[in-house]
Length: 461
Image 1 (cartoon, rainbow, N blue to C red):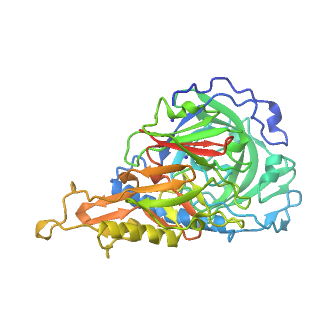
Image 2: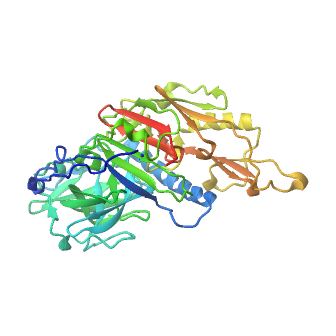
Image 3: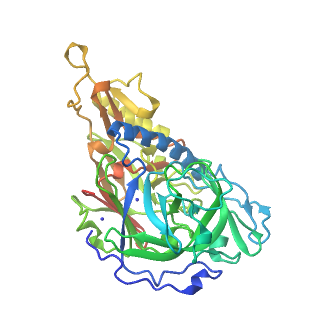
């Protein structure tokens, strides 16, 4: 949401001052690059490609609704006073999207380490897990994190910088920061904001141990989709990216049916990220990253259009523009499976496919199949065999300074036995668009937060 590198080349030197009232400061201490494995939430479930994609479509609908709330600001809720815990209005404060996310990071929290599988989310910031004793907790695969069993757990004081960076926080307990964090799908976590040691196991076998601010949730509602917490990778101060002052991060996502592990790398990351392991198999393309003052956590890109077949569609640039009020715009998101377009854009894209395929829309497909076309019948009225593949027009996404040519498998779902062919796009439900993880599969994607660029190239992840 990846190359030959030396992981953890220099040990991290951590200061005890982290556990004081200020935010964790590891910018100077963070050295070397880290490479982690990512696990898809449906990994190991022995499902067909069609079943895996249908489940991802269902999650995408939830994510689309959550993103719509977060982008529009319709889910804005009152904040709290850090010192007195009293409600006060904070104009322009949005909720974060969440929705059912897609990829898990295995990590450990505390001393001694307690294992946690957390969902990766490039669309939010808070790092949190569920904690014992828990007044209201969600189903999760791991035991609840037990702060009482960790010698490095320290509740953050109300004067802590990260405490004040939480949109809704209070100090109802003496000098202890408590928080409430809301997601657009209705998921909410409440608890104590604390500092704790997080351990990440690099795919090289080495371990990275760093102190981080995190939410220790004891009242949680909503969904964690087979995770035990969320690791925010957005741009705001609470995220892993911000707390560790990560200059670059990169991921390479494998297809859902692959037995190969997806990978995530972060650190300083040289330009060699496109070489070595998961080496690029095609040209590296680069576009700019944009920011919104209203929605600062998202990774926006200057999207300029879509080509279907040989025709660049006549869609005005205004359809993809990031507006001053924070609406519109196009984000790149690891937590959404399908690519989401505003209704008017989606209509134009599907119209182009229908004109070039010369096939009718299916009348009996499930809503979870996306937008599907009826494929030709075999002789005698029988459906075509599983080996039959209908020729589909190419699709390309255009950005300022870059073009993303999509492999057929990254936007088409064939089901010859059912006589259908589905285009893996969906309605965003608002004026914004989202580049989902499905079109990013077998693609090395690099976020350069110093240069404010996004680079990508095809790769065998």
